[in-house]
Structure formats: structure tokens, C-alpha cells
Image (cartoon, rainbow, N blue to C red):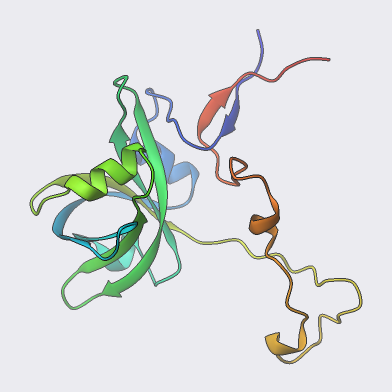
Length: 171
């Protein structure tokens, strides 16, 4: 029997949010939608309330939001935190809606009062490797040459997060 490998997207139904959060050294919680606003033809802003400082941390972190897809399977999608308002206990996500995914559908139809299962914060990882010829002792990011980010050079469907079980192939 092959050992499952985890990749972006689907969540094993046996994993509770609390168990997953513990494995990720994060926090699980339920947040309430307080606002959903279309900012452009392809961006929707969703503001969630509840444990904002704990779940979202600071702008730039990611949170994982749980959904149920068209087949009834639980899936999580990871979104970058745009803003955190600790005084109001709210955080804001900007979600691309130019495609037909479970998260973009949710963002377009989210209404105040909707409750969402959220795990966070999920900090972004940074590479400490500098491009060839650049010293890590450089004092300013502006001293590094402007190059495409590693994400921009990967195929669109290659993602760094992991959640969906897939079976490795043998050669």
C-alpha cells in the first residue's frame, strides 16, 4: 500500500482543525464574516472577526480557511492576511475571484454572520539564499538584482503548501 503524500488543497476528513493546528504549531478557531466587498472584477475583500491577533497575527501571514467542495469533501484554502485590526478583533483577506474555485465562490457570496473554520497564523517562508554574486551581508534589499520570484517561475499549478493526499508513482 503506497504511503500518502500531501499536496495543496484537500483535507483528510479524519483530521480535525484542532489536530491540524497542533501539527502546524498554529491555532484553530471559528471566525465570523463581518463584511464582504467586491474591490474589482477579480478581487473580493472579506473581513473576519474573532481571535484576529491569534489567528492572523500580522499582515503578510497566511490563514487556512475550511470549505466543503462540490463533492462534499472538506478542503482548505490558504489566504494572505491583508490587515489586522486588534481593537475591533478583525482581519481582512483579499481573495482573487477571477476563477471558479470553492474559495472564490465563497468570497463572492459571503455574508455577515457566516461562520468559518480558520487555522493560523501560517507564516510565509523566506529563502536565505542570495542570487549568485550577491553577498548575504548586503545591507539593503535594493542592492540585490531584481529577478522574478521563485513562485513566478514555477508552473501555475505548482504550490508549496500541502494538504491533499496523492499517491506517488513508481518508475
